[in-house]
Image (cartoon, rainbow, N blue to C red):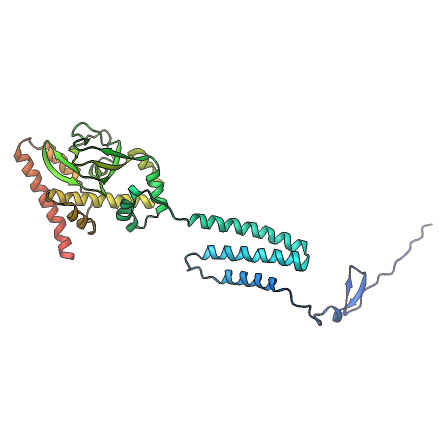
Amino acid sequence: MSIVTTIPLTVPPLGSVLDLKNATLVPFNETACENWKEIHHLVFHVANICFAVGLAIPTTLNLHMIFLRGLLTIGCALFIIWATLYRCALDIMIWNSVFLVVNLLHFIYLVYKRRPIKIEKELSSLYKRMFEPLHVSPELFRRLTGQFCNIQTLKTGQAYAAEDKTSVDDRLSILLKGKMKVSYRGHFLHNIYPCAFIDSPEFRSTQMNRGEKFQVTIIADDNCKFLCWSRERLTYFLESEPFLYEIFKYLIGKDITNKLYSLNDPTLNDKASKKIDRQPSLCSQLSVMQMRNSMASTSDSEDGLQIFLRGTSSASSLLTGPAEHLS
């Protein structure tokens, strides 16, 4: 015969709560905040002020993320001091140590990204004149000029390209120092001055064709220094950088336009070329290379050259006409 013992279930009366630690019933009125605890130490309040100020920084501020991470780092450090010295709370100290490390790493990374980018002295004028006005960041310009390109030199009289001999597929260059002379079968066409592409017409006109040769001869008129890219690697790089790709399209188009002006006036000097360089680009797909090809298709006589020069004069007048009308 089994004996079943019953244990009476005690239901806590209304108006009371079970104190699990002491297993006693505590009335609600004794747990209410009738007696507020003393205010925490000043360090605690300064930490919260840092959090409040950091979260209140407007996003329109240029360095708002750096300021936010910096203030959060300071606030976490103050919380660790408060929890260690004045509260003796291990859990608060551990959590804020984790937050401190995370915010400190973010702060260091953001400051590193904002570091000043040093551009080589030889390239500083090129950046300020061609790329900085188009809002190309120094970091992006350094990536562009730090890979698959080098600075080369030519002495007076040395050839950059020879007509019908030098391939246009290998490189794209910008003149940094000196002056180059462009000629066709001994006839002078125009000069190339610093901060201008040397072979922009060939680059634009032969993007879809391979194996083309220069239609002109380009010779260093002074001791020259130029920045030279590997054409294939530059094209691959620009495909991965859409912004730079558009910048190059604009700069090359503008350079071709300036060369059209130079063909119309072969005596154009460096000062005048800089003035043209500041004007808006009116270039479309029209290429100096097409003119060079038409020149090559004519006879070798002086008449062929005059026909070509008259054609470039007409093309330049078509370009200058709208510009003068707009101004």
